[in-house]
Length: 291
Image 1 (tube, rainbow, N blue to C red):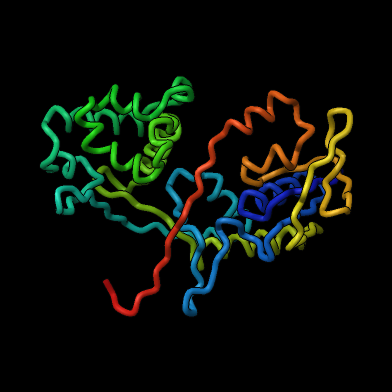
Image 2: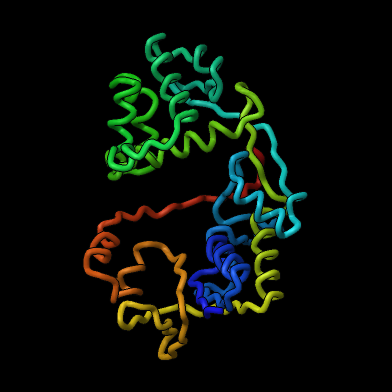
């Protein structure tokens, strides 16, 4: 049995701790916040418990289904039909199915065919390792042409990614298209899933299970550094306190890795430092009147 320390009590950290216990290891989790959940944590909005960042579940998220089943929570998962629109030239157009694409008034017939081929290939294709080193703009231009890209993709990328819009990974956007494209009841209807009570339900269940199986969750305890010796992890420090460990699993944001694990090889540290990080803001408004 190894002593495993997990940094971060978000869904990833909790799931990793739970899996480590299944593999027979002793687990301790350290979370800087005063509550578990990370990006899936909830907050109170006028008496309503709501997630800090929105999440949805797709029909191909099989590891999530397996986890819910193991925790006896598969009954809390529900899939519902969704709708989508594309706002262009002061009008909202239905979007998200072949008929909507054919009826869309702002693309030529050739542009519609090229867009449809891109969507079909993204959803139904296998692993495209070549896309790991291709930017999304180049990939989409190849399928849709300059006009199709300018009409349908340019503003979406620039509103979401700003100065990083030209360097988004094609593998990332293709994976998102495939995940959503396969979460359908039929060719005409997308369906996405949610859990009763939101992600907080899963967070609470994982915490309870981990503690019941002998694990420990430390809240308000920020790991300051991961210690190593002779190329192996020896433990972590929290303030001036050293806590020994046989293994450390980190689920912290990648920009924090170089400072927290300074003994990594220089090449790996450089690769971490080269990763551009984009902060995500989800705005939640509580209004006096319905829109």
